[in-house]
Image 1 (spheres, rainbow, N blue to C red):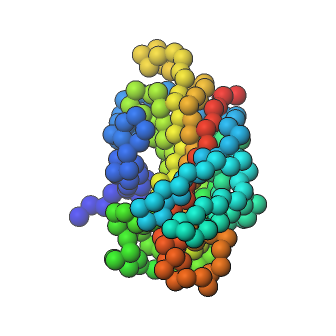
Image 2: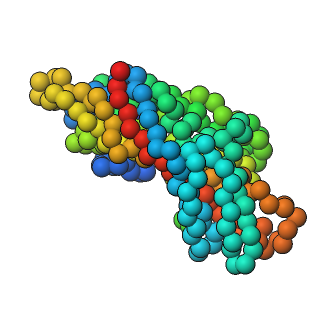
Image 3: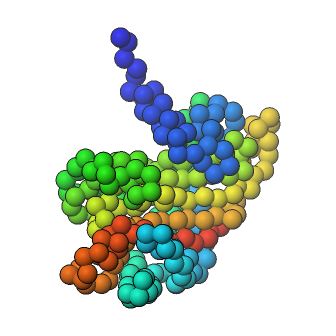
Length: 261
């Protein structure tokens, strides 16, 4: 059997992953060969001054708002007080304004698939042991919906290339900030639903060859963690409640806009 060149294999793998995950506006555009606006260049990003927090424990959902730099979130679940601490100073935590920094550089390297984009961003990585997930603890409705390998150890944050998709009509984009590694419920891996979405303001046309994005509006960046990562409570507390906390998910969302230099 003839082997595919490595570059082509990687490109096809990326297309499949992005197609499977979908994208804002049009999930099929990752494999599109149509023209896309030129997003290449350096972008300055401005953020809202608050974070919208959603905590899901079992079937209960709690919503709070905190400052953009993080802070304590206090809730009462089934009569028990719980405190979670989003501390953006922790080296293993990637807050929304870090996951999508104040200055980013976008690239479109694949001239065949112009809707694919690359941005170098901070990403969580496993410095411990990767293990196969328990089939009873992964899948739909869990913190590991895709049954990815689980990081059983410490987490580090490294600058890595992050892939994204420009919508088919060129008016939106999505970057995938998490996924590929699953949390053990305690360590601070970005959950698979961590994304950055935005609307693109363009000028020129595809027909004239001068189609260019120069502004981002309506942007939303969302990062998610397992409850055990941010739990500020006593790890020796009631076992049943502890299990609920470790299976909880916490998402942080803030808005942003951007201008190309």
